[in-house]
Image 1 (cartoon, helix red, strand yellow):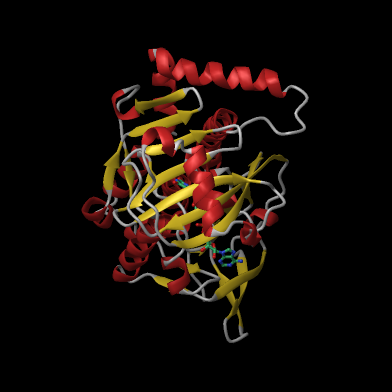
Image 2 (image 1 turned 45 degrees about the horizontal axis):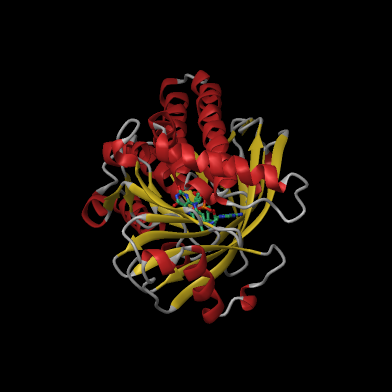
Length: 389
Ligand code: RFL
Protein backbone atom coordinates (compact mmCIF):
# COMPACT_ATOMS: atom_id res chain seq x y z
CA UNK A 1 0.00 0.00 0.00
CA UNK A 2 1.25 3.46 -0.84
CA UNK A 3 -0.48 6.55 0.52
CA UNK A 4 0.20 10.04 1.82
CA UNK A 5 -0.33 9.54 5.57
CA UNK A 6 -0.25 6.20 7.37
CA UNK A 7 -2.24 6.51 10.59
CA UNK A 8 -1.35 3.94 13.23
CA UNK A 9 -4.26 3.24 15.57
CA UNK A 10 -8.04 3.65 15.32
CA UNK A 11 -8.69 5.36 18.63
CA UNK A 12 -10.03 8.91 18.98
CA UNK A 13 -6.70 10.45 17.90
CA UNK A 14 -6.23 8.32 14.78
CA UNK A 15 -9.84 8.49 13.68
CA UNK A 16 -10.27 12.25 14.11
CA UNK A 17 -7.03 12.75 12.22
CA UNK A 18 -8.04 10.34 9.43
CA UNK A 19 -11.41 12.06 9.02
CA UNK A 20 -9.84 15.52 8.84
CA UNK A 21 -7.19 14.41 6.36
CA UNK A 22 -9.83 12.65 4.28
CA UNK A 23 -11.97 15.79 4.21
CA UNK A 24 -8.93 17.79 3.08
CA UNK A 25 -8.45 15.37 0.19
CA UNK A 26 -5.30 13.82 1.62
CA UNK A 27 -4.87 10.12 1.09
CA UNK A 28 -4.50 8.10 4.27
CA UNK A 29 -4.99 4.60 5.57
CA UNK A 30 -5.54 3.58 9.16
CA UNK A 31 -3.88 0.45 10.57
CA UNK A 32 -5.57 -0.98 13.66
CA UNK A 33 -4.34 -3.98 15.61
CA UNK A 34 -7.76 -4.95 16.94
CA UNK A 35 -10.99 -5.94 15.20
CA UNK A 36 -13.65 -3.36 14.36
CA UNK A 37 -15.95 -4.99 16.89
CA UNK A 38 -13.30 -4.68 19.60
CA UNK A 39 -12.61 -0.98 19.11
CA UNK A 40 -16.32 -0.18 18.82
CA UNK A 41 -16.96 -1.84 22.18
CA UNK A 42 -13.97 -0.62 24.17
CA UNK A 43 -15.44 1.59 26.86
CA UNK A 44 -13.05 4.12 28.32
CA UNK A 45 -13.72 7.86 28.34
CA UNK A 46 -17.06 9.57 28.49
CA UNK A 47 -16.51 13.22 29.34
CA UNK A 48 -15.71 15.40 26.36
CA UNK A 49 -14.44 18.92 26.95
CA UNK A 50 -16.04 21.83 25.08
CA UNK A 51 -12.92 22.42 22.97
CA UNK A 52 -12.95 18.79 21.86
CA UNK A 53 -16.66 18.98 21.10
CA UNK A 54 -16.01 22.15 19.09
CA UNK A 55 -13.42 20.30 16.99
CA UNK A 56 -15.91 17.53 16.26
CA UNK A 57 -18.70 20.00 15.41
CA UNK A 58 -16.50 22.20 13.22
CA UNK A 59 -15.57 19.21 11.09
CA UNK A 60 -19.02 17.66 10.86
CA UNK A 61 -18.17 14.75 13.17
CA UNK A 62 -20.65 15.47 15.95
CA UNK A 63 -23.94 14.02 14.67
CA UNK A 64 -23.90 11.10 17.15
CA UNK A 65 -22.68 13.25 19.98
CA UNK A 66 -25.35 15.86 19.34
CA UNK A 67 -28.16 13.33 19.13
CA UNK A 68 -27.15 10.96 21.96
CA UNK A 69 -24.76 12.93 24.18
CA UNK A 70 -25.85 15.25 26.96
CA UNK A 71 -24.41 18.23 28.78
CA UNK A 72 -22.98 17.79 32.25
CA UNK A 73 -21.86 20.55 34.57
CA UNK A 74 -22.02 19.56 38.24
CA UNK A 75 -19.58 17.57 40.31
CA UNK A 76 -20.12 16.70 43.90
CA UNK A 77 -17.44 16.11 46.49
CA UNK A 78 -18.36 13.86 49.39
CA UNK A 79 -16.00 13.79 52.36
CA UNK A 80 -16.18 12.70 55.97
CA UNK A 81 -16.91 16.33 56.99
CA UNK A 82 -19.83 16.66 54.59
CA UNK A 83 -20.36 17.22 50.91
CA UNK A 84 -20.79 20.01 48.43
CA UNK A 85 -21.81 20.44 44.82
CA UNK A 86 -19.75 22.52 42.45
CA UNK A 87 -21.58 23.67 39.35
CA UNK A 88 -18.51 24.11 37.18
CA UNK A 89 -20.72 25.01 34.23
CA UNK A 90 -21.53 28.27 36.03
CA UNK A 91 -18.01 29.11 37.17
CA UNK A 92 -14.91 30.18 35.27
CA UNK A 93 -15.63 30.31 31.57
CA UNK A 94 -19.01 28.69 32.28
CA UNK A 95 -18.81 25.69 29.98
CA UNK A 96 -20.15 22.16 30.44
CA UNK A 97 -18.80 18.77 29.45
CA UNK A 98 -20.64 16.63 26.93
CA UNK A 99 -21.11 13.04 28.04
CA UNK A 100 -20.73 10.69 25.10
CA UNK A 101 -19.08 7.28 25.63
CA UNK A 102 -15.77 6.90 23.84
CA UNK A 103 -16.82 3.67 22.10
CA UNK A 104 -19.81 5.46 20.58
CA UNK A 105 -17.58 8.29 19.40
CA UNK A 106 -15.18 5.76 17.89
CA UNK A 107 -18.09 3.99 16.19
CA UNK A 108 -19.31 7.31 14.75
CA UNK A 109 -15.82 8.25 13.55
CA UNK A 110 -15.23 4.91 11.81
CA UNK A 111 -18.60 5.12 10.04
CA UNK A 112 -17.91 8.66 8.90
CA UNK A 113 -14.43 7.84 7.63
CA UNK A 114 -15.64 4.79 5.70
CA UNK A 115 -18.57 6.78 4.30
CA UNK A 116 -16.07 9.27 2.86
CA UNK A 117 -14.20 6.44 1.12
CA UNK A 118 -11.48 5.98 3.76
CA UNK A 119 -9.81 2.64 4.51
CA UNK A 120 -9.29 1.17 7.96
CA UNK A 121 -7.31 -2.07 8.06
CA UNK A 122 -8.47 -3.84 11.20
CA UNK A 123 -6.60 -6.74 12.76
CA UNK A 124 -3.45 -5.32 11.22
CA UNK A 125 -0.63 -4.75 13.68
CA UNK A 126 2.16 -2.31 12.93
CA UNK A 127 5.31 -4.18 13.96
CA UNK A 128 8.17 -2.07 12.61
CA UNK A 129 8.52 1.39 11.19
CA UNK A 130 11.48 2.74 9.32
CA UNK A 131 13.11 5.24 6.95
CA UNK A 132 11.71 8.03 9.09
CA UNK A 133 14.36 10.43 7.87
CA UNK A 134 13.51 9.86 4.23
CA UNK A 135 10.59 11.08 2.11
CA UNK A 136 9.07 7.59 2.08
CA UNK A 137 8.80 6.24 5.62
CA UNK A 138 7.17 2.82 5.93
CA UNK A 139 5.34 0.53 8.32
CA UNK A 140 5.62 -3.26 8.32
CA UNK A 141 2.26 -4.58 9.48
CA UNK A 142 1.07 -8.10 10.17
CA UNK A 143 -2.50 -9.09 9.32
CA UNK A 144 -4.65 -11.57 11.27
CA UNK A 145 -3.78 -14.38 8.84
CA UNK A 146 -0.06 -13.80 9.44
CA UNK A 147 0.76 -12.00 6.20
CA UNK A 148 3.19 -9.07 6.39
CA UNK A 149 2.36 -5.93 4.43
CA UNK A 150 4.55 -2.95 3.78
CA UNK A 151 2.66 0.34 3.94
CA UNK A 152 4.48 3.40 2.70
CA UNK A 153 3.49 7.02 3.20
CA UNK A 154 4.95 10.47 3.09
CA UNK A 155 4.23 10.84 6.80
CA UNK A 156 3.39 8.47 9.63
CA UNK A 157 0.95 9.52 12.37
CA UNK A 158 1.61 7.63 15.59
CA UNK A 159 -1.82 7.36 17.22
CA UNK A 160 -1.32 3.83 18.56
CA UNK A 161 -1.39 4.65 22.27
CA UNK A 162 1.33 4.50 24.87
CA UNK A 163 2.34 0.91 24.14
CA UNK A 164 2.34 1.05 20.34
CA UNK A 165 5.39 1.07 18.11
CA UNK A 166 5.30 4.82 17.42
CA UNK A 167 6.12 6.18 20.85
CA UNK A 168 9.04 3.78 21.10
CA UNK A 169 10.39 5.02 17.76
CA UNK A 170 10.67 8.66 18.84
CA UNK A 171 13.83 9.15 20.89
CA UNK A 172 12.81 11.47 23.72
CA UNK A 173 13.61 12.34 27.27
CA UNK A 174 10.52 11.23 29.14
CA UNK A 175 9.43 12.50 32.54
CA UNK A 176 7.66 9.54 34.14
CA UNK A 177 5.55 9.52 37.26
CA UNK A 178 4.01 6.38 38.67
CA UNK A 179 1.57 7.80 41.17
CA UNK A 180 1.56 4.60 43.21
CA UNK A 181 -2.23 4.51 42.92
CA UNK A 182 -4.45 1.89 41.29
CA UNK A 183 -8.15 2.19 40.49
CA UNK A 184 -10.60 -0.58 40.03
CA UNK A 185 -12.62 0.72 37.06
CA UNK A 186 -16.15 -0.66 36.92
CA UNK A 187 -19.03 -0.44 34.49
CA UNK A 188 -22.39 -1.07 36.09
CA UNK A 189 -25.60 -1.79 34.24
CA UNK A 190 -27.77 0.66 36.14
CA UNK A 191 -28.70 4.31 35.98
CA UNK A 192 -26.37 6.68 37.83
CA UNK A 193 -26.87 7.01 41.57
CA UNK A 194 -26.73 10.76 41.08
CA UNK A 195 -26.81 12.88 37.92
CA UNK A 196 -23.63 14.55 39.23
CA UNK A 197 -20.09 13.27 38.94
CA UNK A 198 -19.36 12.02 42.45
CA UNK A 199 -15.94 12.23 44.08
CA UNK A 200 -15.83 10.30 47.34
CA UNK A 201 -12.94 11.56 49.46
CA UNK A 202 -12.49 8.95 52.16
CA UNK A 203 -9.68 7.76 54.44
CA UNK A 204 -10.05 4.25 52.93
CA UNK A 205 -9.34 5.62 49.46
CA UNK A 206 -11.01 7.38 46.57
CA UNK A 207 -14.34 6.34 45.06
CA UNK A 208 -15.98 7.97 42.06
CA UNK A 209 -19.10 7.81 39.98
CA UNK A 210 -19.34 9.11 36.41
CA UNK A 211 -22.66 9.01 34.56
CA UNK A 212 -22.36 7.49 31.09
CA UNK A 213 -25.74 6.58 29.57
CA UNK A 214 -29.21 6.26 31.15
CA UNK A 215 -28.47 2.61 31.93
CA UNK A 216 -24.67 2.36 32.19
CA UNK A 217 -22.67 4.05 34.95
CA UNK A 218 -18.94 4.08 35.60
CA UNK A 219 -17.58 3.71 39.12
CA UNK A 220 -14.01 3.85 40.33
CA UNK A 221 -12.56 2.50 43.54
CA UNK A 222 -9.01 3.07 44.64
CA UNK A 223 -7.59 -0.30 45.61
CA UNK A 224 -4.34 -1.71 46.84
CA UNK A 225 -1.79 -1.70 43.99
CA UNK A 226 -1.22 -5.42 44.54
CA UNK A 227 -4.94 -6.27 44.24
CA UNK A 228 -6.36 -8.28 41.37
CA UNK A 229 -9.93 -7.93 40.08
CA UNK A 230 -10.70 -11.30 41.73
CA UNK A 231 -10.09 -9.66 45.11
CA UNK A 232 -13.17 -7.51 44.51
CA UNK A 233 -16.37 -9.51 44.38
CA UNK A 234 -19.69 -7.69 43.98
CA UNK A 235 -20.44 -7.57 47.70
CA UNK A 236 -17.06 -6.02 48.50
CA UNK A 237 -17.37 -3.50 45.65
CA UNK A 238 -20.80 -2.27 46.71
CA UNK A 239 -19.89 -2.11 50.41
CA UNK A 240 -16.82 0.00 49.60
CA UNK A 241 -18.74 2.26 47.20
CA UNK A 242 -21.49 2.81 49.77
CA UNK A 243 -18.99 3.62 52.49
CA UNK A 244 -16.70 5.89 50.47
CA UNK A 245 -19.55 7.72 48.71
CA UNK A 246 -21.23 8.19 52.10
CA UNK A 247 -24.49 6.58 51.02
CA UNK A 248 -25.70 6.67 54.64
CA UNK A 249 -25.79 10.47 54.42
CA UNK A 250 -26.55 11.07 50.73
CA UNK A 251 -28.92 8.23 49.95
CA UNK A 252 -28.55 4.72 48.54
CA UNK A 253 -26.61 3.86 45.39
CA UNK A 254 -28.47 2.45 42.42
CA UNK A 255 -26.91 -0.99 42.24
CA UNK A 256 -26.88 -3.31 39.26
CA UNK A 257 -24.81 -6.01 37.59
CA UNK A 258 -21.12 -5.16 37.23
CA UNK A 259 -20.56 -5.76 33.53
CA UNK A 260 -16.89 -4.83 33.33
CA UNK A 261 -14.06 -4.51 35.83
CA UNK A 262 -10.44 -3.68 35.20
CA UNK A 263 -7.45 -2.17 36.95
CA UNK A 264 -6.00 1.19 35.99
CA UNK A 265 -2.59 2.13 37.31
CA UNK A 266 -2.31 5.92 37.56
CA UNK A 267 0.78 6.73 35.55
CA UNK A 268 1.96 9.80 33.64
CA UNK A 269 4.57 10.25 30.95
CA UNK A 270 5.59 13.55 29.39
CA UNK A 271 8.08 13.40 26.54
CA UNK A 272 10.20 16.28 25.30
CA UNK A 273 9.83 15.26 21.63
CA UNK A 274 6.69 14.37 19.70
CA UNK A 275 8.34 13.96 16.34
CA UNK A 276 11.14 11.99 14.78
CA UNK A 277 11.68 12.75 11.10
CA UNK A 278 8.38 12.02 9.37
CA UNK A 279 6.75 10.30 12.32
CA UNK A 280 4.54 12.48 14.55
CA UNK A 281 2.79 11.40 17.75
CA UNK A 282 -0.70 12.30 18.96
CA UNK A 283 -3.01 11.23 21.80
CA UNK A 284 -1.85 8.62 24.30
CA UNK A 285 1.18 7.92 22.10
CA UNK A 286 2.28 11.50 22.76
CA UNK A 287 1.60 11.46 26.48
CA UNK A 288 0.30 8.97 29.02
CA UNK A 289 -2.00 10.78 31.39
CA UNK A 290 -3.87 9.53 34.44
CA UNK A 291 -7.68 9.48 34.05
CA UNK A 292 -8.10 11.56 37.24
CA UNK A 293 -9.28 14.65 35.34
CA UNK A 294 -10.66 12.94 32.20
CA UNK A 295 -8.16 14.58 29.85
CA UNK A 296 -6.79 11.74 27.68
CA UNK A 297 -9.44 11.50 24.97
CA UNK A 298 -9.74 15.27 24.86
CA UNK A 299 -6.02 15.70 24.33
CA UNK A 300 -6.24 13.05 21.63
CA UNK A 301 -8.96 14.95 19.72
CA UNK A 302 -7.26 18.34 20.02
CA UNK A 303 -3.87 16.92 19.07
CA UNK A 304 -5.39 15.24 16.04
CA UNK A 305 -6.80 18.52 14.80
CA UNK A 306 -3.47 20.31 15.24
CA UNK A 307 -1.69 17.49 13.45
CA UNK A 308 -4.20 17.47 10.59
CA UNK A 309 -3.50 21.17 9.96
CA UNK A 310 0.27 20.64 10.09
CA UNK A 311 0.17 17.68 7.71
CA UNK A 312 -2.16 19.48 5.29
CA UNK A 313 0.19 22.45 5.19
CA UNK A 314 3.17 20.18 4.64
CA UNK A 315 1.53 18.04 1.96
CA UNK A 316 -0.50 20.63 0.09
CA UNK A 317 1.30 23.89 0.69
CA UNK A 318 4.83 22.52 0.99
CA UNK A 319 5.12 24.39 4.29
CA UNK A 320 7.07 22.17 6.69
CA UNK A 321 7.20 24.75 9.49
CA UNK A 322 3.78 23.57 10.68
CA UNK A 323 5.29 20.26 11.75
CA UNK A 324 7.55 21.96 14.28
CA UNK A 325 4.70 24.27 15.22
CA UNK A 326 2.51 21.22 15.91
CA UNK A 327 4.90 20.11 18.65
CA UNK A 328 5.22 23.66 19.97
CA UNK A 329 1.43 24.07 20.20
CA UNK A 330 0.58 20.61 21.51
CA UNK A 331 3.22 20.46 24.25
CA UNK A 332 1.83 23.28 26.47
CA UNK A 333 -1.64 21.74 26.16
CA UNK A 334 -0.25 18.41 27.35
CA UNK A 335 1.66 20.04 30.19
CA UNK A 336 -1.38 21.97 31.44
CA UNK A 337 -3.53 18.84 31.37
CA UNK A 338 -0.85 16.89 33.21
CA UNK A 339 -0.53 19.55 35.89
CA UNK A 340 -4.25 19.63 36.56
CA UNK A 341 -4.55 15.85 36.49
CA UNK A 342 -1.85 15.68 39.14
CA UNK A 343 -3.64 18.39 41.15
CA UNK A 344 -6.76 16.20 41.03
CA UNK A 345 -4.81 13.14 42.15
CA UNK A 346 -3.62 15.02 45.23
CA UNK A 347 -7.15 16.26 45.90
CA UNK A 348 -8.89 12.90 45.63
CA UNK A 349 -6.55 10.41 47.26
CA UNK A 350 -5.47 9.98 50.84
CA UNK A 351 -1.72 10.01 51.46
CA UNK A 352 0.05 6.70 50.91
CA UNK A 353 0.43 4.49 53.98
CA UNK A 354 4.21 4.96 53.95
CA UNK A 355 4.09 8.74 53.43
CA UNK A 356 6.22 10.21 56.25
CA UNK A 357 4.26 13.47 55.90
CA UNK A 358 0.81 11.87 55.80
CA UNK A 359 -0.73 14.07 58.50
CA UNK A 360 0.56 17.20 56.83
CA UNK A 361 -0.77 16.13 53.42
CA UNK A 362 -4.18 15.36 54.93
CA UNK A 363 -4.37 18.95 56.19
CA UNK A 364 -3.41 20.33 52.78
CA UNK A 365 -6.10 18.26 51.12
CA UNK A 366 -8.69 19.50 53.60
CA UNK A 367 -7.65 23.10 52.89
CA UNK A 368 -7.88 22.53 49.15
CA UNK A 369 -11.38 21.08 49.46
CA UNK A 370 -12.45 23.92 51.74
CA UNK A 371 -11.18 26.46 49.20
CA UNK A 372 -13.45 24.89 46.60
CA UNK A 373 -16.42 25.44 48.91
CA UNK A 374 -15.72 29.00 50.00
CA UNK A 375 -13.59 30.69 47.37
CA UNK A 376 -14.95 31.89 44.07
CA UNK A 377 -11.39 32.21 42.74
CA UNK A 378 -10.70 28.56 43.49
CA UNK A 379 -14.00 27.49 41.94
CA UNK A 380 -13.11 29.45 38.80
CA UNK A 381 -9.65 27.88 38.70
CA UNK A 382 -11.13 24.43 39.09
CA UNK A 383 -13.85 24.94 36.51
CA UNK A 384 -11.59 26.39 33.84
CA UNK A 385 -9.11 23.56 34.24
CA UNK A 386 -11.72 20.85 34.58
CA UNK A 387 -13.29 21.58 31.20
CA UNK A 388 -10.37 23.35 29.54
CA UNK A 389 -7.17 22.31 27.85
P1 RFL B 1 -6.34 4.69 22.07
O1 RFL B 1 -7.76 4.97 22.29
O2 RFL B 1 -5.65 3.79 23.03
O3 RFL B 1 -6.21 4.10 20.60
C1 RFL B 1 -5.00 3.55 20.15
C2 RFL B 1 -5.34 2.46 19.16
O4 RFL B 1 -4.11 1.95 18.60
C3 RFL B 1 -4.21 0.56 18.47
N1 RFL B 1 -2.84 0.01 18.42
C4 RFL B 1 -2.26 -0.40 17.29
N2 RFL B 1 -2.72 -0.47 16.03
C5 RFL B 1 -1.87 -0.97 15.08
N3 RFL B 1 -0.61 -1.39 15.37
C6 RFL B 1 -0.13 -1.35 16.63
N4 RFL B 1 1.10 -1.75 16.91
C7 RFL B 1 -0.96 -0.84 17.66
N5 RFL B 1 -0.82 -0.65 19.00
C8 RFL B 1 -1.96 -0.13 19.44
C9 RFL B 1 -5.01 0.14 19.70
O5 RFL B 1 -5.62 -1.13 19.50
C10 RFL B 1 -6.03 1.27 19.82
O6 RFL B 1 -7.23 0.98 19.14
O7 RFL B 1 -5.46 6.02 21.99
P2 RFL B 1 -5.89 7.53 21.54
O8 RFL B 1 -6.56 7.52 20.22
O9 RFL B 1 -4.67 8.33 21.73
O10 RFL B 1 -7.02 7.95 22.61
C11 RFL B 1 -6.69 8.11 23.97
C12 RFL B 1 -7.89 7.75 24.84
O11 RFL B 1 -8.35 6.44 24.49
C13 RFL B 1 -7.56 7.80 26.33
O12 RFL B 1 -6.68 8.87 26.61
C14 RFL B 1 -8.81 7.99 27.19
O13 RFL B 1 -9.64 6.86 27.10
C15 RFL B 1 -8.45 8.30 28.64
N6 RFL B 1 -9.65 8.33 29.50
C16 RFL B 1 -10.49 9.43 29.51
N7 RFL B 1 -10.20 10.52 28.72
C17 RFL B 1 -11.05 11.57 28.68
O14 RFL B 1 -10.76 12.55 27.98
N8 RFL B 1 -12.24 11.59 29.39
C18 RFL B 1 -12.60 10.53 30.19
O15 RFL B 1 -13.70 10.56 30.79
C19 RFL B 1 -11.69 9.40 30.29
N9 RFL B 1 -12.00 8.32 31.04
C20 RFL B 1 -9.97 7.21 30.27
C21 RFL B 1 -11.16 7.23 31.04
C22 RFL B 1 -9.14 6.09 30.31
C23 RFL B 1 -9.47 5.00 31.09
N10 RFL B 1 -8.58 3.90 31.10
C24 RFL B 1 -9.01 2.57 30.85
C25 RFL B 1 -7.17 4.16 31.08
C26 RFL B 1 -11.49 6.15 31.82
C27 RFL B 1 -10.65 5.03 31.87
C28 RFL B 1 -11.03 3.87 32.75
